[in-house]
Structure formats: C-alpha cells, structure tokens
Length: 498
Image (spheres, rainbow, N blue to C red):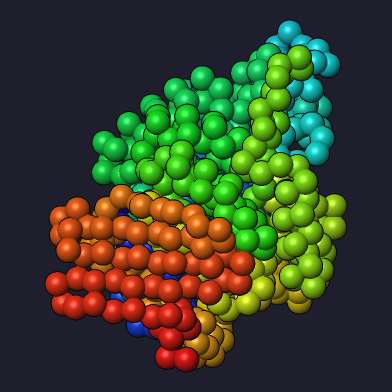
C-alpha cells in the first residue's frame, strides 16, 4: 500500500461516475491523493444501503461505468474496493430463487438461517450471546419455498447473510475476488468481516473461526496481487490483536480520541493510544459511516462474571464526547443518530467530522494529528471539502448516515476548493503524500495541552517534519525540512493562502 494520502469517495457523489471521479482526482485534487477507496460501485450502487447490499457483486453498475474505467483509474491511483463478505441483497437472483424454490434451489446453501447455525435449536442464552451492531436479534422471518424460515440478517432485512462455510459460499466469494482484482484493484476492504462467521455458543464476532477465515481469504487475495484491509469496529485491545494477524486494520480509535483532546484539552488518552497502537493501520477521521465510539469504550463482549475491561475513555468521557458533537453540530447529529434515524447503529454518531470539530483551525489540527500518526491516511470526500451536515438529504431519506453523504456538483466542488480551510487541507495532503519524512517512526510528547509530534525519514534522515498542536484552542505550528530547504507556518490556514 502506498504511503500516501488516499481519498474515500462514492463515484456518484463526487464526479457522478468512475470517469468523473477520475477527472476530479487528476485535476482538482492533483497531487493530493495517491490512491482512492471507491465505495461500492456494484449493481446497484444505490440500493437499500448505498451499495453495501449488492445484487451482483461481480459487475460495475453501468450507470457508473465499467471495469475498464476502474482499470484506467488504477493506472494513476491505487484503487481500493469493498468486498462485502457477510451478505448480499435480498433482491439478488440467488436469493430470489431460494425464496421461490426453497431447499430445491441450487443456491439454498448459500444463505444462512437460524436452523443452519443451530440445527438442534438455540437456547435463550445462545441467542443473547450473539454480538449485535443494532438492537434486536439478527433474524428476519421470510418464506423460503413452502416454509417460513428465520433468515440470518445481521444488519437489515434487505441484507441476507451468506454461509461462507459451504462450497457454494466459497465459490461465490472467489468469483467476487476474481472480478475485483481482474479490474485492477490492488487493495480490498473486507466489509463487516467480524460478523461473517457464525459459531454456535459464541458471540459470533471476531472468534477464532473468524481469524481463520480472514487468514485464508487474505492468502487468496495475495495470490491475485491484492492486499487486505480488515474493517472491524471493536474494543481497542481486540484491534491490537487483529493487527497482528492481518495486513492492515483501521485505526477507528483515533477519531474520538482526537475529538476528546480538542474538546477538552486533555491529550492523555490520545497519548496512551499513540503509545500502544499498531502501526499497520489505515488512519481515518471520517468515513461513509458515523463517528465510532465503541472503539474507545469498554469491552462489550465480556462474559457474565468476568472482570470488566475498561476502554480508552471512561463512560462519562464518552457521554461528554457525544454531547459535544451534538452541541457543535447545533443538534443536527442528534437528528441523525440512533433511534432518531432508520439505521440504529449502537456505536456511531452521524455527522460530518468538520461540523463535529466546530471550526477551521481545530479541523486542520485534527488532520495534522492524523497525518503525523503512523499508518496510511484516508480522507473521506466530504471531509476533503470540509463539508457540513446535509440536513436536506437526511430529511429526504430518513437515513442517519446520509447527513454525511452529500452529492457534490462540479460547481460545489469548485466553491469548496476556493475556501482557505480546504486549500490548506489540500496542501497538507500534498505534503503528506510527498515528504520522505513520513516513512519514519513517530516521536511524540505532551506538555500540558501542547502535543508535539515529529517524524524523521528513514531513507533520508535529513528530512524531518514536526508539529506543535495546542489542544486547548486548536492552534498549531508546523515545520519541515528536506534537502531542498526549510519551511515553517505558525497558522495552518497559511497553507491555504489565508
């Protein structure tokens, strides 16, 4: 994976198509991003969950382009794509055939039911132990052939879980992997992989069986020339354990810790995480999902009677963090989160990161912390344009995450790029993507509310970048040097020409 900033974007919402996204990257964003994670572009890209419920996971939606367009983009930018390993759409031809023919369908073993996981029935404690991202049990009653069955639906009734332990399930996933890597994709993101393996008597979340599946699937990806990024929201110690066994993991603890530091001036929890975190990370502050809090909270999978496992933040600190987001967004995030919206995520607050931070200087300070933290940084397209919450889209769809999924026109992109905060962020992205100092380890100090971060190049030790961020007010000083000279800015907005 290139050690350069990557963009995360929906092709239809930034550029209108894969070709349009390619043009934005090569012109307006030239030099800022070395790669792009294109969010699901399969058939259909606009289903019940914005493409994360594929009807045909092997085909590019023709409204967005072709595999040739993906390959063309991959010629200049490293492309990451999602592999949705846990489920397919309830409208997929395979599931529709099972609905009509039941066990007589050749696809019957592709899909999970309660009975296929618990053939002898499940006790109350078995069901209560299943780890859930949303309220309720992970089943939907659906008639398959002439029988009413409890079909396994981890996320929504429109997303039918597949049985990856069967021959049909393995063939299905291999066909998806072949299609994606054949289209020039070099990085694959295993979406919601923590839920992919169901094991009776366990939480069915990140179990030893899950790790074995990830390892085997990663081997298959590597033989096709692709690396694997694992997407798991979980207790921070589990993320450290996961990182030891996979190519790449997300650093989902970073966003809430950065917000906590900038809200309170307290950098101690962030410092502790910087001390113990894995380095084979993709760092993010924002994604197509909400701002996670489970990643800094106590372990929610502790068995009854076992001692609690505290998080990086205390429950009171997490409550204050969530209320802080609601306050800074003027209550918009409250309208989009939990029971206020249709996607009842237990562990996320829905808001753009820009609005959650609250002002330009703190926002740039947050990005500076992200870019100096070891790992490969990704910037979500709304965050790249310092976008605010889209309440109009939220009202139209009643989907909480849509508050952070604005559809940008070309004029809106150009208007955003004229703002000093966006120009400064683009300059930071270009610096992060080109300065050799970022191949070195992190040196970090905390003096009161001042966080000092420094990285020195390994290949070229004369190349150094250093930042001093005052967490209490978000002010930051940045300096860097290379063989070409030395530079310093005392206000990050200076990078944007302000």
